Length: 559
Image 1: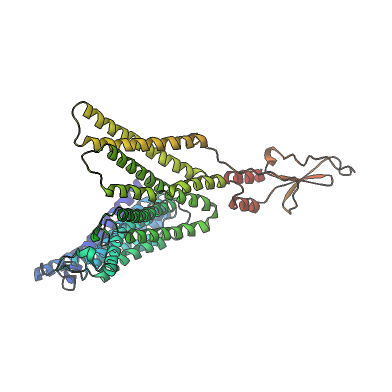
Image 2 (image 1 turned 180 degrees about the horizontal axis):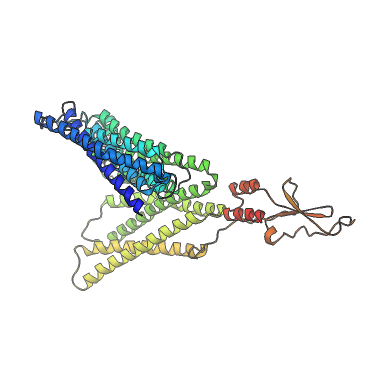
């Protein structure tokens, strides 16, 4: 305990001195860069600013060198006296949290600076550029120190993995913002003459596409780079969880693009005019290309990384594949049932109109959600069949419970909302536009009841509410004879010289510890042949037996 507090003190002071030195470097860089293309014409740098920046940089660097250097020496001495200190949780926490914050902020601000270069009315970028350069320098030093004695086990590895995969996920969010803006602007400029951005207004200056693309590539390189940093960590459960979350994120982007495309088609069928700025341009309401390309990129990258990990651990192939399919099917199901709810809501509004007029956009939106998620029906049936065949029902169980829980929430919230609207109206104190609120709640209630009824029946049929749901393993029958050269345990029956062969029922399978073994009769000897470990592993990978059955066979061999 006392040793841990001592190390906490050492790293806290050391990191604080590093941050102090970095702030001095950033201020000096800002002053220097303000004399270059990053200068702000509205805020010129005077001689007093230069003197202040130089003095602050010198003071911060000298102070950090004295006190930070002393504590770094104490850290190195502590690691020499105790080899376990290099794998300590305190060290891993401080180094990884600083790396996560510094890298994500530097990458995001750097992308903003690069994207702003050459844009109309851009200026005053020296502070962002200085922060990016100084913070990346801090990250590089901390990364060097982390790699000098990398974490190997325990809490230290957990902190390290949270840093690696958490940073990658945050970079994906930053990439999303830049990607949607850049691709939307590219499509608008290349195919629609910039009408979505300028909207036909006079004096509108088109953005600098080169700087926009460069800023997006900046984030993209950091995102892919962090994937390379963790490429060898194929045994991590955290890696798989974060990668599957990111896979689901990419799936949402693709479904968004499909929804927008279907909605545009429906609006065209209903002869509704859509403004150009709603189709193309940065963050356009019905932009299809930007989310589609982003989703395909994200799905492709994370499928590659998941596949790379599975190739090194073949036993996890089925679980990873079924989990990814479960994520996609669940998202499709959410879209499908949302479309059903919106469609039912529109019908209620058509039958009993409220104060809010029903427009063609409402029908197009409901159809968009419904058509986007329609594939959930065949994929759900396929998921059930593949899970049963592979005797691995955990993803299927998660899928059923996700929709079951969503149905309960939709039904409960919808029922309470509609009840509230109807009761207050009956008591003479209605809500504003209470019919609209009541219809929305009633539609959610009906859809929730349908979902709960469907998946309650499924859960009961499959036994998902049991404390230990049984795995449906394929039946493996031991053959009566085996012609294999495998290790055998011979049990002599009768006298060795007896002329008669013992009568053995070939249809009887040994029981007890020999249940997983085959039998063969040779001369006066009953040979019980057990498969080798390699053969058991081959059957497991081929899907002929379950993991639990393979473990049981190997344990029987060791008895």
